Length: 310
Image 1 (cartoon, one colour):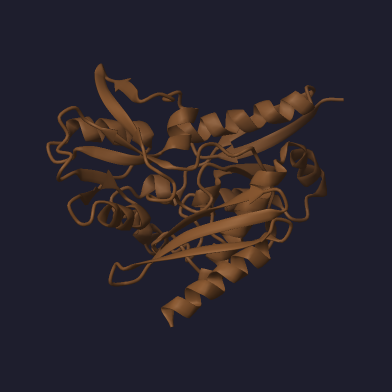
Image 2 (spheres, helix red, strand yellow):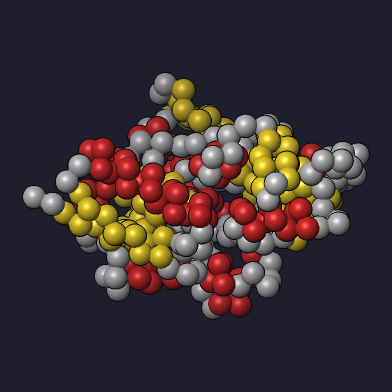
């Protein structure tokens, strides 16, 4: 018997590509499944006139993710059965009535620099709208590089880079580049070549949750939860549970400069994070704990951070 599932997503090329990956994973296990993609415009997509960290306040969505609130509204109203998100865009604590029912196997988690030919490597100017990346750029280059605000989907930012006389490059997630087919050390857009340099995940830490695709459902929708759970990747799920629990303990949104990631090695999990104080000073945290209790690992890392802050 065929079954239809309505999947909500943003309308960017990357968001649609990620939704296609979810559908492919579901259909691999349930070939009879029919999927309907419902494109939803979010505040983060609409408000490109202000920094990303200011969108929640301007839109009145409080601490919800700027790319999540409108999609959750459609999910709550029953207009869609589930939603596909870049997990790094989701707040650490979901609103009541929603849950992450599955995550796909994680892509590469690190950031990458996309640079123009002739970029001034000694005094780089890099485009980003992320406070995490702003702080990482300052720390990584010891103040010799600076950032400039840039917003938009991946291709919009690439074209803004080419059109800019100020920017030497932009910072993007390697996962997004890979999913769009830019898997090598260079890409060509509008006939112009740009180089890609991968950044080390410890020296230039990624966003918590980066590289993971999440499928969100209503908590009370058992049918959909059980359907999408068949594509859940257990190791990725454990790692992002720790990362999201750490975010929740910090009560952090996109305005809080924090980065990090968790990895599993057998029965143990290693959690690494960096938190930037208001004066820009970085605090690095490493904590090890049981892989089957990621929330406890996050709590241990949070305790270490609090002790250093005090």
